[in-house]
Image (tube, rainbow, N blue to C red; front, top):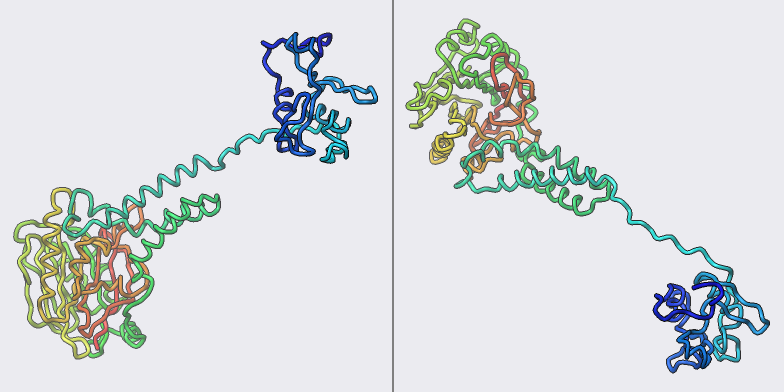
Length: 460
């Protein structure tokens, strides 16, 4: 539209934004639509502006009244302006032809300042830490996947890679805590809720490792630390997988002497290791022993053995038929209670041997049918998180690590570049039998891929 034809407009031209805004009104600023020549029936007092009707010549030329300029009664016109300035002109002129003034019935709008700057559009905020949040979600999904595998029932828990993956369940505490902290810091509400739920579930699974159920008495601790006496009601106990007889015999005997060990169970023994232990002085410290028979079918590292300070009775070199390492057993008396000690080592759940692993744990579980105060020591090749291990415990046995509330005692792997990550060596004892074991600790032994597990047994 040229300056000389300010009051005309080609009907084929698009309607400028200012025309549209002033014709349709702007409820945000309190203006109603323009009505040409007459007041609209739906006009709201003080809200609808009335423009002068177009002249006959203007109508013949298909023109509209000038929306850019209004001649006030004083003759002062507003130059072509933007929407904000044009509205200012209308308000300054008293509402334009009946739209303002007290006579118009609505009071009109008072003078408004010159054009106000239009508010800039806010560009959408870019998410902070977007890529890192994506990585956190990947970590959390992996954790949830492992938690789902942990929930697989015992009947299906010996599938491919399932036992190996479930072994690492306690490690979930670390990544879940990191996700929880960063989700709270970055205000990721959904991730925060998911992380909190995962942490609560993992903690509930392992509550026994932090809240004690049963522990030995302080007097038993003092007695076990003082000496290796067979006449009291306490005994220091120890188990170690010798890794095919490669563990240092001298270090084993040194630990027995330092901790006043009275019951020692060793797995994966060889004849050479037994001779080395004798040469290192083990038989002088623990004079009573029983070594198991050779494995009936699968030799998973060697034989098992038990050494004790107290005399043995009811000795067995192969307590129950099992395809892997035979289980030696013997009765000893601790504080007037007869305790039946058994050294165990079921097959590991490596690929292709999951069936043997399940069968071995089932054989150990069958001991629950006998009326003895059992102390089962050894490498169970399973953790508290394995459904098969919890099935073994049932209502008869308890795991000393899960009952004592003294945290995790990871025993495997040892003497590697990575720290021990899983707890597969255990002291399992009969519940409600008058014995309890706690105060566990682990010690590295040269030559072995397991750490030695040491604890205190108390018999009432």
